[in-house]
Length: 269
Length: 218
Image 1 (cartoon, rainbow over the protein chains, first blue to last red):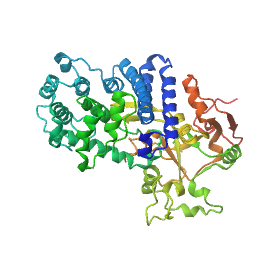
Image 2 (image 1 turned 90 degrees about the vertical axis):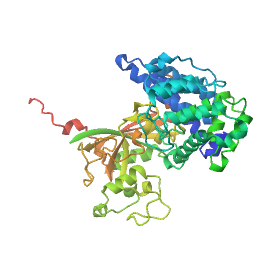
Image 3 (image 1 turned 60 degrees about the horizontal axis):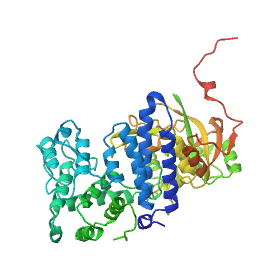
Image 4 (image 1 turned 180 degrees about the horizontal axis):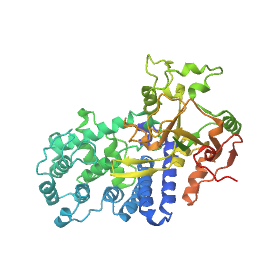
């Protein structure tokens, strides 16, 4: 029994079986050599590896991390920028290296993923963030729930800029003043809202074949935020202060398990 | 008119029941519940509202006031429609890609209860028009085709082609029994999953016999 499947009310045996089948199907696709269709096969393999990783992480985060690595390898091989999200989830403590020049040739997705990859503890206000803001967000207003602007993230309804502000806020935060973390609170609230919407879906509860248990970008954002905390207890103090908003700590615990790849943190809330 | 090949996974059958379906046709849950059916009872079934209930509300309680309403039952349990799959390409919004969804993976997942046990896969063909044909029981609906069905389909990735009332025996080629864990293991070994048993349908008529190909005489 996994604490995550237990809390989510999912059948752990079924989750394990589905995850294994997705992983095995990805292996099948990965190893087929189909000439000019090979790029497509790799893309499809990456997708099934990713889904397998999301499910496996509910049972054994350390095993999930290995599958995120497989997905990353496939995306990287076809030069798809989503490999950076998989990299955050497979090597959560390995910071990417980016220079300003890279950003001006990157798509908005890729630039955003690079920011998540490179944000680190001890950089109070990232120069990369400033570059991104200057280049992409000249006319962007920071709001919580718009279908806004040109640079909406793959996080449905959240702008890149809002995530960047939340990360910046986290990098400056004082533990005693966590109630002032407006952007971070807004991001977590929205991620949890999206997650609750998934959980209320009958197809999700029955594990219909194409359903993803949770959103990988959401998890990557929280993994990036957790880089600012020395340990789980320090993080949980801050996140629990958001409790009056009804935010549960599922994603925080999951992200911490991914970050430490051990799965031995007691379930928080 | 287009002849569309489809597959359908069914969980919980034994081989005898599977062969019985080959002979009788794949019935909708509404039809299976009845011993004597007056076909006029189906008048009024073939509406877009009912189709959407089948697609998006299969596991949900039947709306109160619906003609098929039975307390405590889901719409899927009484639905006059039949779900099949032919695969599809799905938009993955989180990633920004179109991804092929294999119909064998989808139907095996249903048939074997997420690859935990055994299950049966039926191979058949249905008739579609390349446009909506809701009112016509004899034509199936290509709900996977977003240029035809612009209503949001939550489970679009399942590549659904929706038949109505029954897929006649004559259109079902065969049924195969798979072992879910073994099928999964086959993929790991980079081979296409092999069925444990195959039962061919003696009543089957290949669609080539009704397609518009005129052979030379002689």
